[in-house]
Image (spheres, rainbow, N blue to C red):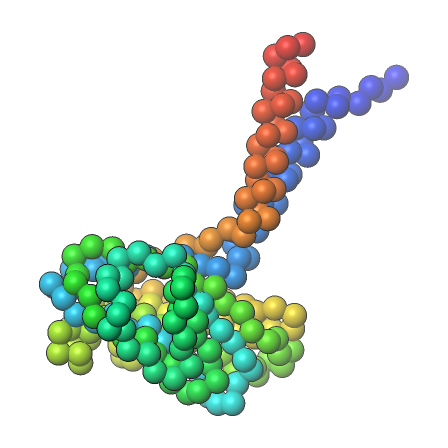
Length: 208
């Protein structure tokens, strides 16, 4: 008579949990942006924008947090639908130009997490909103790095969809910018549970 192998079944279940957690990383609505300013000179300005392709647009937001390398934020310039808060900044897309302009010393790395959200729109013609990153020289006008014609070194586009939002990214200067997914807490919890079950099954096998 066939006897189920509970140890093998447990390991398979644990691996399935771990794989599910990893798959969740790709669909996360929070991304980590890292910028290496070593090739940009000594000083200049960081420019962050979150602008709709047209107005009025379906409401969307981009919130940046876990800031590193920004330096003194007391002189940051905010334009349009941008608010400063204790952990970072929040951008809306209720106006056609929403901008953060920050003076900084170059040579190190700048990093932050950016979380996107907003209302959904089932229409395939829903208006996109773009989060763009640029650097300018000390004169505030000279574009630095290998930039797009619009001056951006990288951009992340939020597309409203039915029930959620879809993200796409474009990096023009890979020497300066990189984007990676940030797992949601539930994904970390699921991955941890999967690894714990694998360890438990392994210990039981050795004990047997």
